[in-house]
Image (cartoon, rainbow, N blue to C red; front, top):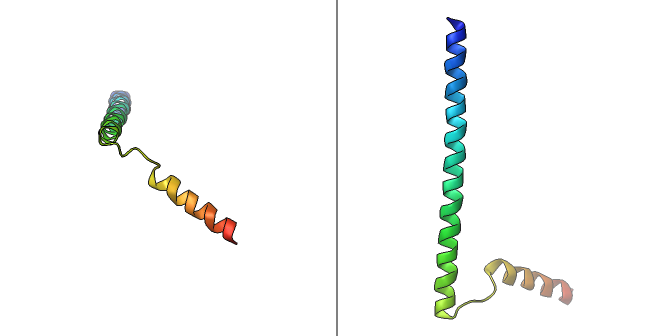
Length: 67
């Protein structure tokens, strides 16, 4: 009886792992798709510029230069 339970448990764990991998892959593809759409929309509007992170880093670098 316990052998059957362990087989069921291993099967359930394997299914859970496969399901998690599929969901992760799907989420990653969705994020990449939305990112490409956002970049295309920004390029279409002509507002392609440095990201907020890079401008923040530039401001920090300028502050270091002042000191």
